[in-house]
Image (cartoon, rainbow, N blue to C red; front, side, top):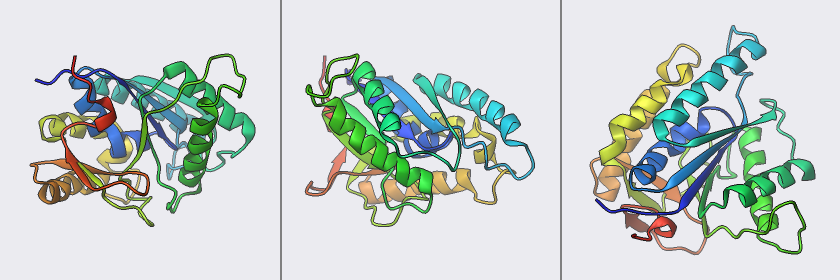
Length: 240
């Protein structure tokens, strides 16, 4: 088995976003020797049809801790409210400081073409934070850190202008990925009418057909890059 080194940082708008769009990618790379941190900008506590937000927030906090253990990833939950994620300099600098602290080689986050305002806000916050984190002239408690690569995994709410540029083989971790999804009540059903588990399981088959694998996920790269088919994210491919 290929052994890799490197650190992967995934930043999602709500609890569950990291898991559905990136858990398979995290699992694939952690199992190969990388480390990973997952960040939830909000807990998505406003999305339950009957539970009060404070009660649902506690449930979601427990769920992200459980899914983090399944992924083998460090979990960070920021204190912002679902639906009200602020796009302020303070938030950008908080994420900048997080990037400098975690020192990721690769960042995965939302594409800007989303139907959800928190997803779009996360895209904008992360991009500014990556820029600030790399500049030594931006004086913060920790020294500058330059991210080697950033990509946009596929999320059903972020499909306006998103494209499949990179097909990643995740066949070996697919059952583990589904277990991560099932650790969230939202994915199992009964909270939302959207069939998350069915959608992402079928999507893995579809992307696998297009990429030439049994199961695959697709990611979008920044404009100007070629379509790729790969077993691991290129910026993390540094064999020991």
